[in-house]
Length: 79
Image (cartoon, rainbow, N blue to C red; front, side, top):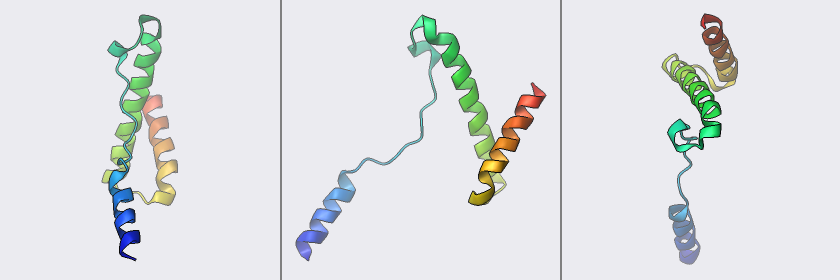
């Protein structure tokens, strides 16, 4: 039993924590893809803004997708 716990502990410690997708840096992309990278970064920033609003308003997980979609639509309507 001790060996199993030891091996399980090592397996848990050896795994890397999952991280969210990093923001796209348009300056690190080839020039021909820079415009697409800038658009992707703008979209990522909008998504993060809506996710932060959802966190602040303590939206339930079951309602989060609808909240995020509505938030993104409202931002698109403003522009």
